[in-house]
Image (cartoon, rainbow, N blue to C red; front, side):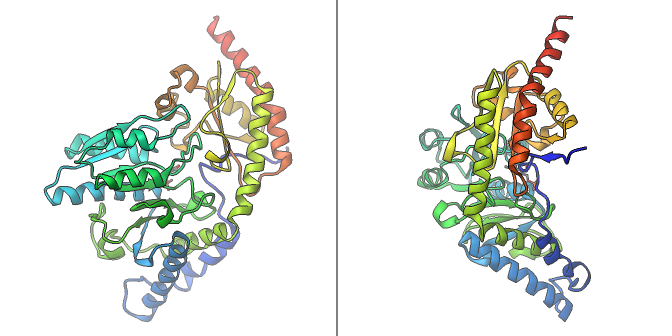
Length: 392
Ligand code: PLP
C-alpha cells in the first residue's frame, strides 16, 4: 500500500523530532517543580524562564507578558472570561464583541458567558470571504464593550483578518482586543506591537510542537482575572504546576518555525496554490471558500462542493490514503453545516459539502499530484451515490 498522505495540518501537526529531543531531559533529569525553592526546582524554573524569553523575543513583548496554559482553548477562555470577570469585579457592565466565524473556543465561551453571567454579546457580520471589516466593527461597538475578539486567521476557510485595523477601532472605544492566533502561528508574524493587540492565544501542536500546551500573551496593565484559580503561578493568572517539558517544547517549536518563516510560508504557498488551481480547474461545481492569495493562510485550501456530503467524501478520500477534513477538527463527524460558512452567507446545503486541505512541512509534489488525480473521480462517485439514494 502507498504511504498515506496527511493534508490536515490545521487540525494538528506531528511533533518535530528536534522538539522531542529538547523536551526529553525535562521528563527524567530536570524534573523539579519550578515553584520549589531547592536546586531541582530552580533548574526547572530556569528552563521555564529561558522558554519564556525565547517566546517573548518572537512575539516582541516582555517575558512577563507570557502566560503558559494547557492549550489554545484554555488561552481563549482565559482571555474572554478573565476580561469580563475583571470588568464585573469593578462593577462595570461587560460585553464581548465577536463573530460566529470564530473557533468554538471563543464563540461557545461567549455564548456561555451571555447565558450565565449576564454578559452582553454582539455578533459581528462577516463578508462572503469570512472577513470582519473595521467598518463593521466600528458600527457595532458600544461604550459598554469590554473585549473584542477576532481571530488572526480562520481555521476553516484560511482568511487572514485585518488585525491591526480592528485593534485600533476597538481601542478608540476603550475596549481590549484579543486575537486567537492559533492557526496563524508558524505562518504569519506574531509581533504583538505591530498587531496592536492586548491578548493573543497560541497552541503548540499547530506548529510542530507538543499537544497540551499553549499560551496567552497579556499586555502589561491589562485587567484580567484568572479563569483557573489556585496557586500563584504565572503572575496569579493561571494556577497549576507548570508542565516544564511541554513548555520547553513549545519554545523550541516556535524558535524553529520563526528562524525559517519565509521559506516555510513560500513552500506552503506553492503546494496550496497547486491544490487550489488544480481543483478549481478539474472538479465541476466547486468554489474556493475564504479569501484568495496573500489574504489567506499559506498552507490552507478550502472549498465547497455542490451535491456532496462532506463526510462521504472524506471517507472516500481516506480509503484512498488521503487524510483531509471538512473544516474544524472538533466538528468532524457532526453533519451540521458549519457556522463559519453559514455566517459567510453560504446556504446550508452547500455548506454541508465543505473540504479543507492543509499542507505541511512534509508535503511533496507527488502528494499533490495524487490528490489532484484522485479527487475529481472521488467527487463524482460521491455525487452518484447521493443521487441514487435521493431517487430511491
Ligand atoms: N482556535 C483555533 C483557531 C483553532 O483552530 C483551534 C484548534 O483547532 C483552537 C483554537 C483550539 O486549540 P487547542 O486544540 O490547543 O485547544
